[in-house]
Amino acid sequence: MKLTDQRRGYIFALIATVAMANVYVFSKAALNEISLYQFGFYWFGMAMVWNLLYALPAGKINRVKFLRKKDFRVLLILGVMELVGTSLFFASIETTSSPANMSFLQNLVPLFVILMGVSFLGERFSGFQVLGVVVILAGALVTSFSGNITETGFFVPGSGFMIASTIFLAGTTIISKKYITNLDPGLLSFNRALFLFILSLILMLAFDQPFRIEQSAFLNTMIGSLLGPFLTAFSTFSALRYIDASKSTIIQSSKGLFVTIGAWIYFSSVPRSFQIMGGLLTIIGVIILISAREKSDQKKGGPVAHPSGENTIA
Image (cartoon, rainbow, N blue to C red; front, side):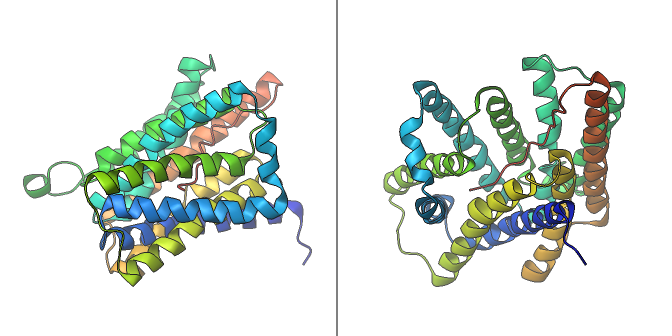
């Protein structure tokens, strides 16, 4: 069977989805053994190593000298926003007992990208997109509901961190869409890792955290950092060479299903049935939202602008 460009795109998108799903599992496994500060130090330190190992042989590091002052300002703003958004992301993983619920909530990113696009970029909002928004919000509400208000409160622990994280990560997408034209994806990934590594190092020293960690925690961190900032990023951008961002985003919105399987294998825990149904609603909502956006842009006869909101947790 001939491997067409479209099939290559779908394969890369699926690889990115599975790789990103494993980030939730391996980061949770590591955070069960070490503090968030220790985790950040090793995770983002190794993330920089993976990115350099990829960038140096390809000569991508030489592109830094061609950056303009405006590019450095954008990198600074993105670095700060990624610092907050990614810190909140891992805070949610550390807090929650169910990483699958958090992965379903990540489907709020395309929603916030659309809403910010309407607010800041002057983009229009179609009626059919409203349905997608409602479905995503309904799904997010259901999947984040604890089911035991008396003991744990209305929301699953960690939900607030994850929702706040999606807002910041959507903001980085909007900034990237408006200002970035010549920044290499590898540079963006390294920039994010550098900011977070420096913050983690400062917090490690401030709170007198030990640099020595258990071998199992180091292994989980090493595998997760390779899957997140490198394999997910590489596969995502490779997919976009062959298929539309909308198709790639729809495939990646299903990562919660893979996280559910991984959490069951690794931790012997799965979300409750109604929470999984809520997660499925977020996937359906993403499909409606992006399909409506694509159809609206095609009617205008202009280039299709996709609210992909794709990000890699480096």
